[in-house]
Length: 161
Image: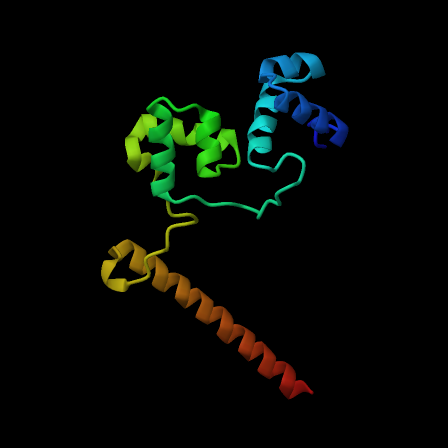
């Protein structure tokens, strides 16, 4: 079961009203008795026009490596996270936090797209070791034996009919 707290539209509108009146995230959190992190995400969404459904989300968004590097470098140069999220259209603060951590650990290469899924299995006989080749041929032999047994069984049943 989803244990996240769902807030009403009225609560969101009240938060937007307080943000627009000049109150900061901490003040609004105290006023509405809500977690600061939730309101920080709401402020980011409000700045991008997404909090009250004014702008529709286009689904799962992917970002280029160049955009990630530019956004992280701008943040590390001193621009606030909220401003970077707004400027580059990054939808989630948590996504951006992961980029910053990867950049700090591995530099720009940490933000490069990685191949997804399993690695393809090498089936070229020239690149297989002798043990792999023998294992493959034994498996193939067993499959052919089973196929022949099934075909013999099928022929026997057809002759009885």
